[in-house]
Image 1 (cartoon, rainbow, N blue to C red):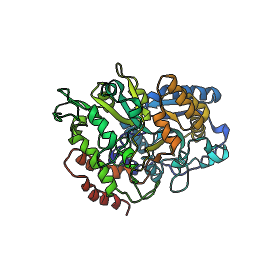
Image 2 (cartoon, rainbow, N blue to C red):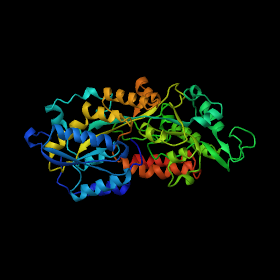
Image 3 (cartoon, one colour):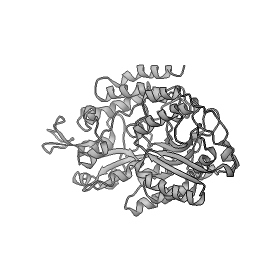
Image 4 (cartoon, rainbow, N blue to C red):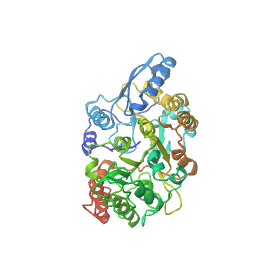
Length: 448
């Protein structure tokens, strides 16, 4: 799952860690699996499901107790980094694809290969590609999949109804970087100024907007998971020369810059809020307050968007692009074991349980996220449907094969350290998208 990708300071702190860690073996005996282990995660919405998993696990393994700690995303990584340095990190923790390359490099993760082999873990039960994401350049496995996500369009149905846009029209939008296609037309028509003029009507005042057609979370840094990657993914553009473990980024590509120019242009036209107005604000809460008609966001936010009182949220798939297809970044989290754990046997057993159908079925039943196990993922879709939420907008990408993997490279924190301000400068109108060519040179210099 997405979110802000951490601070440069975090990576620096990890790099100076003096913990006695190092690619140890996960080969243990069952009799060694006992005692208490600490497990950390960041998503509060998933906490009840994992508490249930811990209780079920303890019943089956009475000699092992799992203590769960949940922290907000930013605080989570800061505290975890400090734990690596101090030598008191949790035994098991939820890991992110932007983080684990650096954690491999600084030997903070315990390889799981022996456990997977000895315990005959069937990696084919997971949605295609998820297990492969957690194999490092050294060929070793550092995590077992827990869930996956794609992105879609959350929209205010009262606003689309008022604008004369049907659910069918919202589900069949198209986009191109020249004029924005029917996607831009919908965004413009859903934008309303304080005098009641729509964005596509004469007399529209872009400096006094009451409802924006499109919400804005930020510049998207170097990934643009829910900001712009669903657009660039339909143009033939890719973030890197290969994925995973690419060493050349393509932010200088005209296809990328053309897309970003169009996207940033929505601000200038008054269809999307100015970047400076979003600082400290929650895009989803702005949607919940009725100030934005459409929000592009990830499937992990379904519960949030469907919980606002007085707001009925529809969900549409991302628009089809120049290649005639939709696109969505495909991200997947995993659970990893800290190399400094004093209880590797119990930690391995817990990670294997987290990755099992038993636990992921529990997660599925809550209707919060899509578990990595294919059968559990289908049960999650059913749980969402039982709540009255149609999640086809997210699952269609997996079904139709229109996903592309989250970008995995070394130097992820440094890349975002360069790209975050650069993207913000373009989005705020301070620089043209062509300025990203110079930044791309600096990004690629990190790999020389």
